[in-house]
Length: 311
Image 1: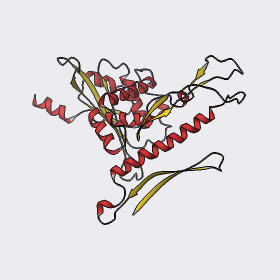
Image 2 (image 1 turned 60 degrees about the horizontal axis):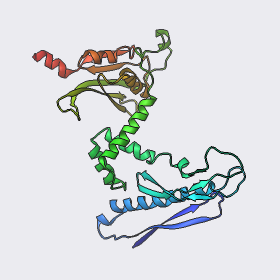
Image 3 (image 1 turned 90 degrees about the vertical axis):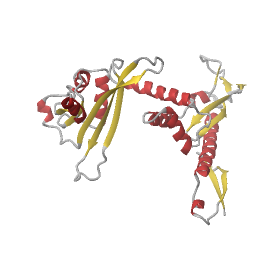
Image 4 (image 1 turned 120 degrees about the vertical axis):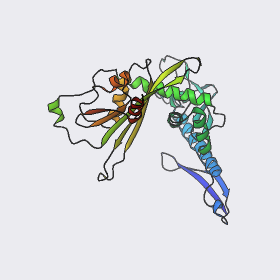
């Protein structure tokens, strides 16, 4: 059988509709692998649908900026150009005309490109998010392989681009991190008694390790990593456990305590909530955990206890 999928766009005035043939599929139904959409078909569908929707949005945006906002006079075309946009479902290029400003009032520039106000970045936020999310879990190369396996992203996307995009996201997040603080305990003991009962149990594991310097193979640097788990009892049904990870380079990070503080408060840490820290007892790790919560318990993890006993 033949399956035709169409895209219907209703304009804001509610009268005119645009119908576009997106894809036509010839589907068999004799074997189990014929059922539904294949991965290749779904990629083709997503890529084609994305192209049509984006083109409609860009065209509508340019049409609304084709006249002077003050007097309504149509703006003159000064030059033609194009602009690329990378998304989860492919990379697309759009016409980006340069228009001359109207003479009805003085402006700082003679001309402008309307599309620059819409495409403020060359990469869609969702693509940046997925690249950063996967790159925080596995290598850049494996992240790229995973994205290309399931999404119709640009096949020309390489490891260097993924690394650059991830670094850009990391810098943006770093800029939003608050100032470092030596003490993270908030309020007074009398205030803590008035807080509602805390939900869940927090357990934080922290450890360090040495990583070889990429540029100077003879040298290493220390990386501190941790995992914070908010768990619930069996009788607390309907509540989803929370797991968050964090990491930083020892001696280079100037906001390590603040970093841990933000992770815990993202899991709704309260000052009357018990929290257990597991670490190897290293001085720097101990300082990281201190004055984080008045209900904190610090435990030397079993691996280092065994090592000390053996020694």
